[in-house]
Image 1 (spheres, each protein chain N blue to C red):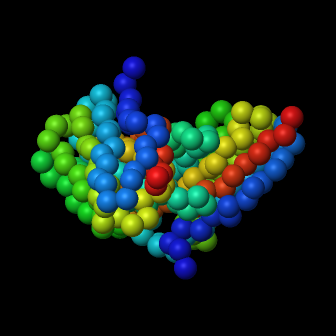
Image 2: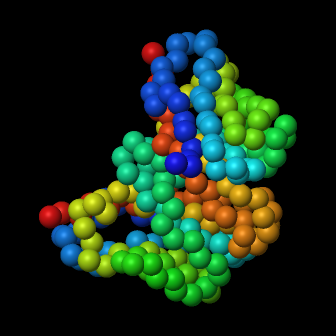
Amino acid sequence: QKEVEQDPGPLSVPEGAIVSLNCTYSNSAFQYFMWYRQYSRKGPELLMYTYSSGNKEDGRFTAQVDKSSKYISLFIRDSQPSDSATYLCAMRVDNAGNMLTFGGGTRLMVKP
Amino acid sequence: DGGITQSPKYLFRKEGQNVTLSCEQNLNHDAMYWYRQDPGQGLRLIYYSQIVNDFQKGDIAEGYSVSREKKESFPLTVTSAQKNPTAFYLCASSIRGQGFSNQPQHFGDGTRLSIL
């Protein structure tokens, strides 16, 4: 079993829909959680960075962490065709090493 | 603009050949990382360096080598010992710190390596 699980998709939604992307993990020591967006043939771009449990909002994006369930989510409101990309979750423990463990990514397609 | 530059974008390797992928950053970051990305898989760590003249193996270091002679540069060599080198290679960098100040990694736009 992988340490971080993510449904590969593809997830196809109409423009304007609310999108929910999720990751589950097995290591209860993870404390820092990130969501990256990766366009085709490009490097991942950091979207959200959160610590421990709770919600964080940034524009149309909301990151949610439920440590008790070992489950994190990224919500995208009013989705746009430009949101079509692969979304990677990443997480790490609280030490100085800054080593990340990544999910396999979910491919999202937003249709006009 | 500050960022991470990877070159070349596309690279082809012949059998028995070593090839070197370049990664340069002007973000003044101490830490740098190399990842490999295969279709449908997450990023896997090859090597990382927290400081100049020091580097550590990641999860899949076999068949790869690195150097860190300058803060700005962290080249990756894919040796002939790496039998399945076809992949998308990503370089990243980050500030070193403690706790939440240990900032997330920022990535370059990758090099796609293929076998001839």
